[in-house]
Image 1 (cartoon, one colour):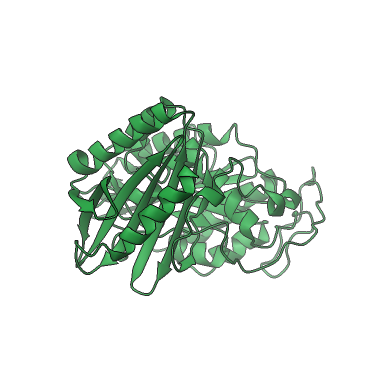
Image 2 (cartoon, rainbow, N blue to C red):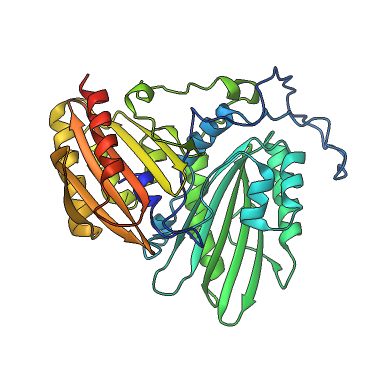
Length: 400
């Protein structure tokens, strides 16, 4: 189903997954006028770490706009399952990254990758992560938006050099125009690739069998480059003014309790699929029923976490088709246990165990809208107090 659904799958040490946030959240930094300088056509001098190159277009301050731009990038970040169908488990790190230091800590851990990205005009990024439940091998993809094509090229070279330690050696992948490093260790290949595409920088971290890693990454990055070739990043000065609600779903999406975190907001179909547990099946289902838009709000309060998702379709007929299909997926494919919610007994509701706690998901539809609500962190599967308040409130929003 949604990022709400994928958000509750296993994510490294975080039980049940990455939580989402949004366009109604408070974000550090304020929007300021930006002076946009065109990239130079001459070869600039190599900067020192403390001296940014003068031709780099200043990045906007982190705001709601940078999160919205990250959501746009989600649509063109390679889905790991396309290249490696067996890597079905979602993992960490994934999602939007508007802070270069946090991205460095999650992806590289060097303490120097963040400053490299900032030096070359880092705006924001989106990442995906999937692993093979059979052997634990993982693949990470990440796409970052930088100042200009030359900045992306230089950032790729510097990041690859920064990561070429601990046994990594420079490598080549035929047909791939970028930087690649390879670590061969105990029958495993560990490959990192940095590929500039316009002002976008595509990154991959991939573990595979001995002798297979470079070929695997070649296949993955071919898909990634193809997705990026038609993408138009938002000019830096326009990022703070990106529309927060392009399809008009924000006010129809219930505000859950607590503080929002960074996945909330609008997504187009491809962006939504980066949150989905089964992108291939859900693409066919949603596209085949006239999907018009998706809005997510997720939050944390005390011991509980919440996720609210709203889908828009042309008519109630399409809504009902998707409503039925999602309910079947939850029970038959994803192992949810059905339960009846006192306030809306006919609503498809399911509970799942996540470590030592439980989470619940319920659906409600009306007219052109389908909503789902998740409550995570419950001590017992039959604790319906929160859901019994939230689902009727969401129903009332969409039925007018």
